[in-house]
Image 1: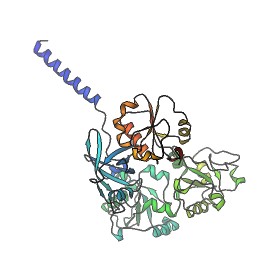
Image 2: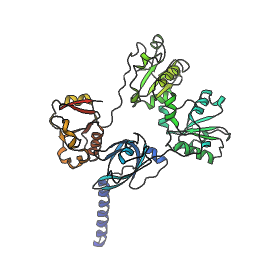
Image 3: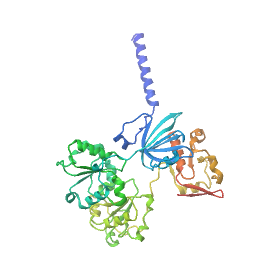
Image 4: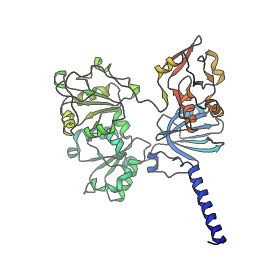
Length: 456
């Protein structure tokens, strides 16, 4: 090989190595849109789309949930623009009026690795003409009649995993993202009354399904805009045995057997509590309503007492109640395990902890003697420390946590504040910087004469 050829080969090898090093050095870009947002929106530079988690005015920080990760953004109260907020007023009032879980778009600029929100746009309600919509009372009447007597077909436009968690009775799953692959589920008669629903007033999936069905020639289509949230506020939903097994394997829930004890003990689903009536005494066994625990009720075959019990629980103000279709018979039909003997007498419900959440009881023990290698960080602002600070903790405000990273090297870091909000933001800020041994206390911390009082 002559010198000229060797030089060319060496240059190519160096270029390849350079590209390989660059590929290894650059981590994969994190998606800017939550998966559910990609059904309607393409990625947009300097924009994030996800679900609202919280706002901390004292640290001028916003927490946005994008699927399984959280993004923390800073903002200037005097400069950030808030659009479509439920309430009008000053910046704080508008930001605080956005409900947790609501879909939002945040436009941002980035400086020194920190994202600063310039626009916070809360997703507005879907706009449809009155003749395109159907209201909850009418849907309730049709569902009570059933598809044949009511002469309708009801389609759930949400993604299949959400349908598995529970749906409106008589509904058929036709996810908007897979609509074009499942048009065989639509009726052959294009004048058949069709109803689409999805996740509520801001969700585009049922209106999107309506447009697709119109394009196929269907002429009698309604959208139940309020969707699943409105239905569950007044009624129970349904779930099948295979779907329940699949959907709730990682989701804590409450399982109630609506049969008398003697019948239930002959065969029941593991974890069930005997609950033959939704009277005042029985209702006290359930978790607090604000916990929104999924409650699943079953009887022998889906034709017994489960519906009455579920209705009673809904009437008491619970909004996440479902009946197991076909009851225990459906469970057996799906070849799922059945137990015999005494059922539990007490409902036990432990919500799934958030990523990075440090158990409250363990925290109470830890603060009596903070172990070596652990840094306890109070992320409140200095002017909030007048009532006290946990002995041994260091005070670093949440919005300055990334300025003290060297102090946390090779340490376990546990953040706390007065509500848990800023502590969680500090945790996500540390996690984004590569700290794998960071945690936060998701609880209230008050001080009485300098002594910490910790509670949910």
